Length: 268
Image (cartoon, rainbow, N blue to C red; front, top):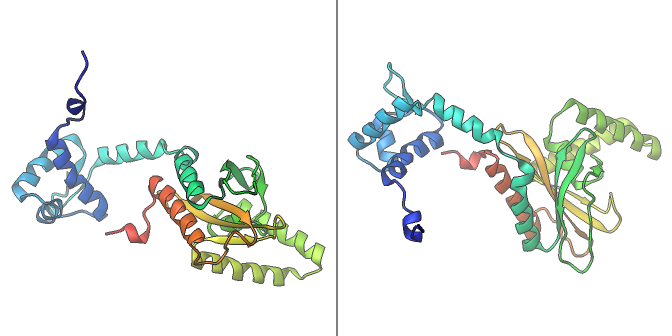
């Protein structure tokens, strides 16, 4: 027997109401007194207490016997860890990349740190008159590509530092420039990138091509990927405060949020 569409959407209202308490606890980041919980959840204290008693029986909420304060319980932690284990940056990035490419009309890509370095794992071709392609699996240099510079600025690993040193040494040998000078110039550039929250490169990797790349963070606050966009010089605006840069940073922030990252602005 078919179920009417409006009945399919019916749920249990009391569960939805009680979830407001859990949202308040999750957003607050610390244990709370009953009165504060109730006020923030928009319900009478007596009603909030009944929900909390049930949640404590289930292990979703726990209460400190000494202070009387409530906090998320062990079962909440289990649910959170199980949810995080299911998060796949590549899968979650699909719709973000599609939306970004459609918005800015440029080629966009997702890169992650692989065995060989910053590696392109997914890309979406832009709709502009000039096609710019990125081969999946290509490893991008750390010092001359927007993607690589994003990883150099925000990602931390021993192998990254070794690869960075190797690239700088190769540049020093090729240009007869002292290593200390190259390292100093790079650190200035990386600090600028960190200050703007996005990296850029202009024609340094591929002549005639500009690029922006913004870091993506997970729930631990560590960089796990980069969202990159490429376009032709003269058409692709590389100003730090350009609408293009803003769109790419916004897309990276959206994916970061889906991966559980809470920026300073997200905290209550």
